[in-house]
Length: 528
Image 1 (cartoon, rainbow, N blue to C red):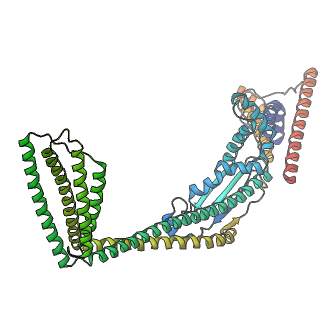
Image 2: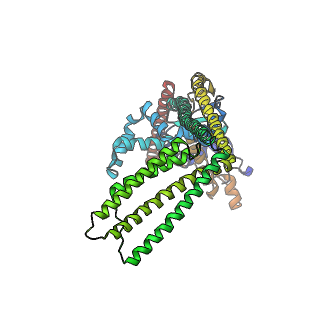
Image 3: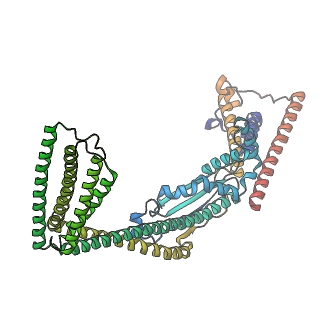
């Protein structure tokens, strides 16, 4: 029967009769829905949310020079990734766990004990920390709106837990930010101090090389002042005379070699230690004589004295060779002794003359190089002066930065607390963010009664039985003469009443359980 058909002419009494007749169709959905609602209320944990809006000002004391030269410590990161990582890193979350004593949660420790069976290499505390850090990362949200402005939001089972979590995150964020600023300043101070020390040593080394170069140039200039055109002419004359002597001694050596070959003699130049010592001494005195000739003529007393000494030592060398070959008289004839001694002495003479020529030629060459390398010396000294100037400039810069960073450290400590502005402080939530017990209870009642009413309407619409006189007359097309009333079956009526009473008791108990649960949750929220 269509309950909404106007032809049925239903009155409120008829609706009551229909509801009475379809009472089990009405109450059965309610009986089914209410336990489901109770289960939902019993198993659903309320989630509460707390948040805070904080603004972080950038440090205005960061040295511009250090930003350019200090790698990795001068750039302050207030971008999305930098601020979020400062809160969501494992170190900060570990401090949250420790300060809020989250490790004491028995449920988490029991779960960790079960997990330890699969991970025996980890301790229970390590597994607990892993679980808690994973839970905190899911419960915490960081939203950065623009540079320096961010929102810290946390979700927990109770309003107080969410509030304490956000408050702790704010405290740790400010604490870590202040420590980070101090660490940056200390790193900059250490960097500037180390660089200042390095460039101080470089400056001292550059100044020492410049001073030594200037001293060397002064010494060379002092030595070169004596090389006048007359001195150069005397030295060149001495070189020519020495070369003539060398040529003469070589001609004599050829003559001696010719006589040795003609006589069929075998010559052997002996190696005598005394001769070697005398030869070394002669070479030293020849060098001294060459240096003296830069200032004195060959007829000066000092040059003559050295020449006399050289001649005396040359005579000693001649006697050494004569005695050496005379000692082997049984092997050499007097002619052989004379020829061998003359050849050995001639060898020594050629060495002495070569040494003298090289020494004199070296003086002239140094003078010529000094005259031609004048511009090179100027470039070298200018380069050293520029190096000293640049090194001193860098050293002064790092020294000033080191001193400025020490002042910045003091100011930064005083300025640290004012850099953080709490625009919206955290508060304890009054209502949960998910469905509360009251909402679930109301939805359960509405859903139960709605389903019951829908089942009743559907049952009546699908029921084709004849219920009224009008339906009978319409169906049979004959008038109704009489109506027989419904006869109750007493046993059936008793069973229906018992079932109805049981259903009523169940509904009362269900409603009482819901009200008790609601009262407990409200009391818990008020205590927190």
